[in-house]
Every structure is written in structure tokens, then in C-alpha cells.
Amino acid sequence: MGIAVRADDAVVSNNIIIADGKESRPLVLFGSGTAVIGNRIEGSGVAAVHFTARAKPLTGSRNLLIGNAIGSFRPAAGKAIQEDDGVQANLVLD
Image (cartoon, rainbow, N blue to C red; front, side, top):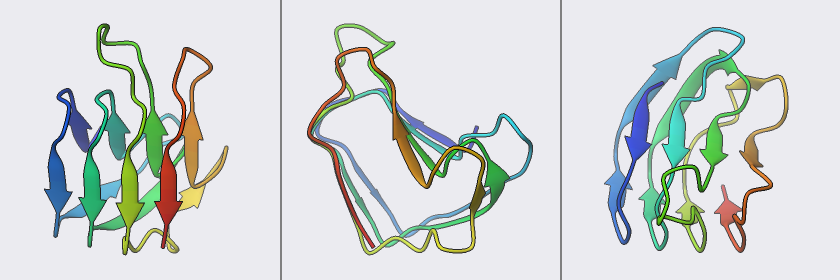
């Protein structure tokens, strides 16, 4: 794992995150209302971004990702995935 955000209303910006491995998830968001801006994610794994509500009471919802370079990441499941555990309304714009 690269960066795990376990708080609401965080800002994650201007990082280079490199992960490799079939189970890797370079950016995991547990919290809500987080802005993820201007990061570069490289390598391979399950997904570049993973939204989850496993850290209750955090919900992994209403996060905004904009202007992140994730095009070179090689995902097995998709560029961004969200678990079916109550996560909702996340927006990923590149």
C-alpha cells in the first residue's frame, strides 16, 4: 500500500506513488470529503485507487480525485474500485 487516508476532509496532493504486485492498492481512501489532486500513480495491482468503508465510522464516500496521472498504472480490476460496503458518490476525473 502506498498512501492510506483514514480521516475525513483530507487533502492529498503532489505525490508520486509507485506500487507493484497483484494485490497492491497504491491509494486507499477510508474517509470522506477528501480532495486528491495532482498526484502520479504508477505500477500495477488491483486498482490505482480503492474506496472502502472498512474503518468505521468512516464511509469512504464523497471523495474527489482530479488531475491525477494514473494512465500508466496497470490495473487488474479497474483504475478505481469501490467496495460494496456503503461507499458511494466518489468522483474520479483525470
